[in-house]
Length: 176
Image (cartoon, rainbow, N blue to C red):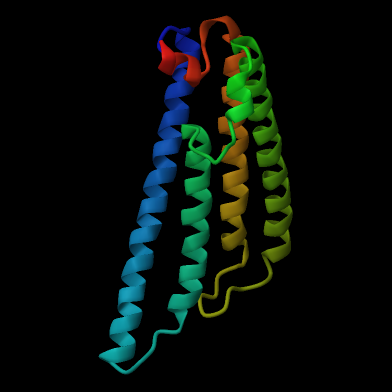
């Protein structure tokens, strides 16, 4: 989207930065996850002392890996989708369908954000076993993913609406 206004280019730049941050945080969580499981194996088989907190930390980290990765996938448009019928439509209809999909994804993200916020409030008084931190830290992954999906898909849909004449679906771009 290089031919767009500086404002839209700046929005795209910020969204790309947020996507990169999601991938970085997911990657760090994955490295910590692998490292702690290495410690679990070492502790269990070498030291003969099993660190019991590793399982709970793994459950927490896997939430962040999955949800932040999913949000980055929405930004990159690499989420699962069936495009057969959309791709058979005329270009104008394809564009409208792509905007509708973005808005539906944004609505889904908004629901995740709302439900995650309710879960965070509900889980504040419950501690994760072995870690002794509020359950809210686990549901923060859901809430942040919902916010990011709402932001990524919603702004992409809005940008597509504002620049309707200037862009073409990827299938059209590949054929050119």
